[in-house]
Length: 266
Image 1 (cartoon, rainbow, N blue to C red):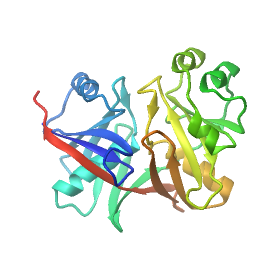
Image 2: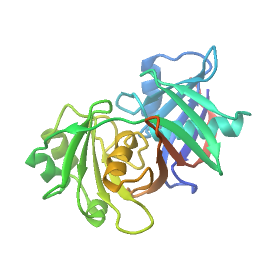
Image 3: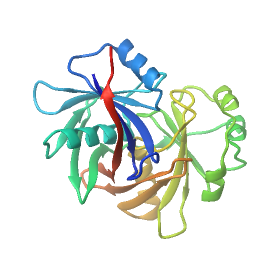
Image 4: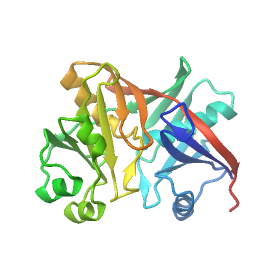
């Protein structure tokens, strides 16, 4: 099976978020896809397969479980298809029934994603302690992704966070991850974020497109903007441009770099 390693949300190798991309000719079992994801050991591996009609089926697996929606693995998959096949656009169909429309513009890949809502939430003192936070500005929860959002008031504090992941898992359950974010007070970006998800993947995801399904609207409303620039302050770093559309969808614009391609022997 043709398999690729792609660095997403960057135009430089060894930056952004690496994903595995497998071009499946036939339907694979869940057990096999999970085993492959564990073997490649990236935060996510995407498995794409041509549909009978237009477009492609896409599924995402972390080394722990299937993930319903993943931005950086979608971007990586689009990069592989645009590079290897003569396509003007792509439709990816997910296990949630989403139709992800992918195009290209000005040298970047443009992904159309859904926009999700946030609901009020609470967080325990033990969870804050495990994250290394003394206080937060706001806490909310997204049901579709099972992710908690925490806003803090300082990007430097965000960049220096070093959670105790064992304590974090012990303090909180029933979620897939915690997204910590802060407003950026210069002209380069509108906000920074980091995503911790030891419950369902690795300790930290370097750059996370899926969290922007709720993060874009959150900051769009706070800043009164429809076009935003996002920076993920992980060790590898990554960035993306966001556009909130009037039809309730989100455009995520960025690039990716294919760093390895070969054949996976099954």
